[in-house]
Image (tube, rainbow, N blue to C red; front, top):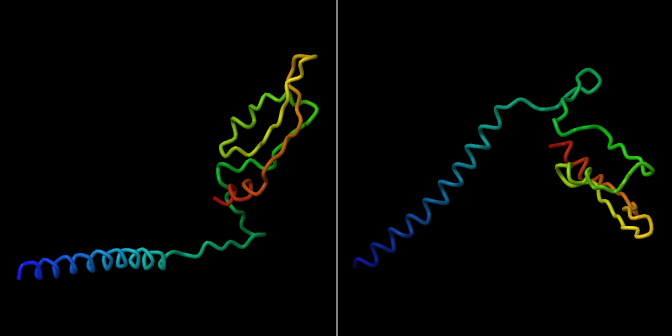
Length: 110
Protein backbone atom coordinates (compact mmCIF):
# COMPACT_ATOMS: atom_id res chain seq x y z
CA UNK A 1 0.00 0.00 0.00
CA UNK A 2 2.76 2.45 0.90
CA UNK A 3 4.70 2.05 -2.34
CA UNK A 4 1.57 3.05 -4.23
CA UNK A 5 1.17 6.20 -2.12
CA UNK A 6 4.81 7.19 -2.56
CA UNK A 7 4.43 6.60 -6.31
CA UNK A 8 1.49 9.01 -6.42
CA UNK A 9 3.45 11.56 -4.37
CA UNK A 10 6.44 11.32 -6.72
CA UNK A 11 4.12 11.72 -9.68
CA UNK A 12 2.59 14.79 -8.02
CA UNK A 13 6.01 16.35 -7.47
CA UNK A 14 7.04 15.56 -11.03
CA UNK A 15 3.97 17.32 -12.44
CA UNK A 16 3.95 20.33 -10.12
CA UNK A 17 7.56 21.34 -10.80
CA UNK A 18 7.16 21.69 -14.62
CA UNK A 19 3.85 23.48 -14.12
CA UNK A 20 5.63 25.97 -11.84
CA UNK A 21 8.36 26.55 -14.46
CA UNK A 22 5.76 27.10 -17.16
CA UNK A 23 3.95 29.54 -14.88
CA UNK A 24 7.17 31.46 -14.21
CA UNK A 25 7.87 31.73 -17.94
CA UNK A 26 4.33 32.89 -18.58
CA UNK A 27 4.65 35.56 -15.88
CA UNK A 28 7.85 36.86 -17.50
CA UNK A 29 6.05 37.00 -20.85
CA UNK A 30 3.17 38.92 -19.29
CA UNK A 31 5.55 41.36 -17.59
CA UNK A 32 7.09 42.21 -20.98
CA UNK A 33 3.70 43.02 -22.52
CA UNK A 34 3.50 46.19 -20.42
CA UNK A 35 6.73 47.61 -21.92
CA UNK A 36 6.67 50.29 -24.59
CA UNK A 37 7.92 49.45 -28.09
CA UNK A 38 11.58 50.14 -28.83
CA UNK A 39 11.02 51.46 -32.36
CA UNK A 40 12.60 54.84 -33.06
CA UNK A 41 11.83 57.32 -35.83
CA UNK A 42 15.33 57.54 -37.35
CA UNK A 43 15.68 60.95 -38.92
CA UNK A 44 14.09 62.66 -35.92
CA UNK A 45 15.47 60.50 -33.13
CA UNK A 46 19.02 59.19 -32.91
CA UNK A 47 19.86 55.71 -31.64
CA UNK A 48 22.02 55.63 -28.53
CA UNK A 49 24.95 53.38 -29.38
CA UNK A 50 26.49 50.96 -26.92
CA UNK A 51 29.76 51.72 -25.16
CA UNK A 52 31.51 49.06 -27.27
CA UNK A 53 30.77 50.88 -30.54
CA UNK A 54 33.87 52.71 -31.81
CA UNK A 55 32.91 53.31 -35.44
CA UNK A 56 35.18 51.86 -38.14
CA UNK A 57 38.44 50.12 -37.32
CA UNK A 58 41.35 52.12 -38.76
CA UNK A 59 44.38 50.17 -39.96
CA UNK A 60 47.43 51.11 -42.03
CA UNK A 61 49.28 48.13 -43.45
CA UNK A 62 52.55 50.05 -44.00
CA UNK A 63 52.78 51.24 -40.39
CA UNK A 64 51.95 47.91 -38.77
CA UNK A 65 54.87 46.26 -36.95
CA UNK A 66 52.97 42.99 -36.30
CA UNK A 67 53.02 43.39 -32.52
CA UNK A 68 49.43 42.03 -32.16
CA UNK A 69 48.50 44.66 -29.59
CA UNK A 70 45.27 45.36 -31.49
CA UNK A 71 44.31 41.68 -31.27
CA UNK A 72 45.06 41.53 -27.54
CA UNK A 73 43.21 44.75 -26.72
CA UNK A 74 40.06 43.94 -28.71
CA UNK A 75 37.34 42.66 -26.34
CA UNK A 76 35.98 40.13 -28.84
CA UNK A 77 39.18 39.14 -30.70
CA UNK A 78 38.31 40.60 -34.10
CA UNK A 79 41.67 41.33 -35.72
CA UNK A 80 43.54 38.32 -37.00
CA UNK A 81 47.24 39.03 -37.48
CA UNK A 82 49.41 36.61 -39.45
CA UNK A 83 53.10 37.32 -39.04
CA UNK A 84 56.44 35.79 -39.84
CA UNK A 85 59.82 36.31 -38.24
CA UNK A 86 62.40 37.35 -40.84
CA UNK A 87 65.86 36.08 -39.86
CA UNK A 88 67.82 38.39 -42.18
CA UNK A 89 66.37 41.62 -40.75
CA UNK A 90 65.47 40.14 -37.32
CA UNK A 91 61.98 41.61 -37.31
CA UNK A 92 58.41 40.43 -37.51
CA UNK A 93 56.90 40.94 -40.94
CA UNK A 94 53.16 41.26 -41.40
CA UNK A 95 51.78 38.69 -43.83
CA UNK A 96 48.04 39.21 -43.47
CA UNK A 97 45.71 41.37 -41.39
CA UNK A 98 42.01 40.63 -41.43
CA UNK A 99 38.96 41.70 -39.45
CA UNK A 100 35.86 39.56 -39.01
CA UNK A 101 33.14 42.12 -39.73
CA UNK A 102 30.22 39.79 -38.95
CA UNK A 103 31.15 40.00 -35.28
CA UNK A 104 31.55 43.78 -35.47
CA UNK A 105 27.96 44.21 -36.63
CA UNK A 106 26.65 41.75 -34.05
CA UNK A 107 28.62 43.42 -31.24
CA UNK A 108 27.17 46.83 -32.17
CA UNK A 109 23.63 45.53 -31.76
CA UNK A 110 24.21 44.22 -28.23
